[in-house]
Image (cartoon, rainbow, N blue to C red):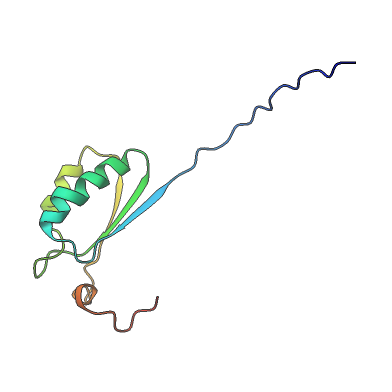
Length: 98
């Protein structure tokens, strides 16, 4: 007696969502524009992207006009770290938990 070949089981699997976080506490404007921004744009095509970055101060951080290049990209979640201690992100680990 021959065993009948089994038919593959067809399943509907929900697509996975890949989440990518860019944490950029000391990125310079040049590095953001030339290195990081192109990576963010590419990743946003297929992933849920979050960017944590402080405003420009003392040579690190970004300015609002730098976000204009992302107008035609899929949605990106921007988290601008502009709280009262944003300068500490660049210089101190004091009081931070790991």
